[in-house]
Length: 369
Image (cartoon, rainbow, N blue to C red):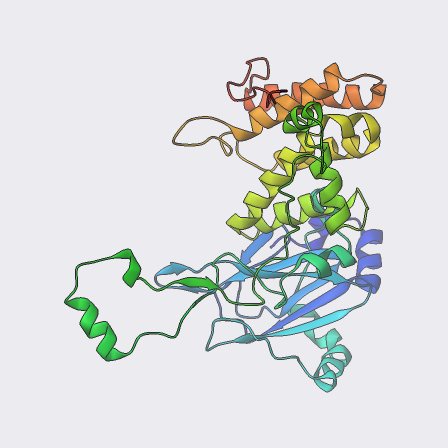
C-alpha cells in the first residue's frame, strides 16, 4: 500500500488525520482480499484496518482466500462521519465479517487506544478519492439505507434457500432409481433480507385510457415510465434516478453483483429513451450524461458486447439518447454541447458507430377503426 506522502500533501494529511474516519477490522486472516471503494489489497499480518477515511459514502469489501483461490466478493456500504470509528470483527467459522455488534464498551476501548493502533492502520489512498466521488456524488446516506439489503450485506453470490423442506434420505434414494428430470431439482429462492432493494420498474408504457396516438408515442418514448418510476419509488425526486444508477453501478463493477448490472441497464434504457422528458427536464439529462461519462471510463472497451450476437446494447441505447437530443426542440446549448462531447469521446475510446440505424427500433403502430 502506498504511503500517505505519495497520496496527499501535508495539510490534507493532517486534516484527514484529525477529521477522517477509521475502520477497525479485527482478526482478519493473512492473505484475505480486502478493499475499500476502488482500492484492493491482500491483508498482511499486522493489518488492523484503515484510517483517514474521508467522510461520506464508502464501500468496504472482502473475499476469503485459500489454496483453492479467492472466494466470492462480499461487502457493505457505510456513510462514514467525521472522526467516526467503525469496528468489525472477522467470523472465522463462516469466513466473513461477523454480524454480531461489537459492544459499546469495546468500541470505546479501541477509540482510547487508537494512538497505539495507528501503526497497524493503513491510510486511505487519497489519490483514488476524486474518482470515487465522481462515481458516487449522488449517493447519500438515505439512498444507501433505502437500497441496501435488509441484512446490509452486498454479496456477489446469491444466498439461496429451498422453496420447500429438503428431501429425506429415503426420498433422495427413490429419486436415484428414476430418470433425470428438472422437476426433481430443488426449487430455490433468495434468502429473505439478502436482496438489494432495487426500485420497481413500471411495466405500463402509457397512461390509462390512452388514445391510439399516445400508445404509439409512448411505445417509443419512455417518459411515462420514467414519471411512474420516480413517482412510485422516489417520491417525485427526479435526481434519485441518478442516485440509483450510481448505486447499482458500484454494486456491479466493485461488488460483482450481476443483478445490479441488469438494473443498471434497465435504468439507462429508460433515461435514454425518454424523449419528452429530455425537453422538460434538461438539467437532469445534463447530469445524467455526466454520470454516464464517469462510469464508462471504468469499463473495458469490449465490456458491453454480447458474445453471442456481437451486438452492443449500450450503443443502441445511447444512439437513442443522442438522436433525441439532436432532433429535440428547444434544447439548451448546455445539453446539446455536453451530448456532442460525450458522443465524440465514446466514438474515440470505444470505436462505436452511432450513425448506423438499429434494426429493432420500429415504432409501435396502433390501428384505428
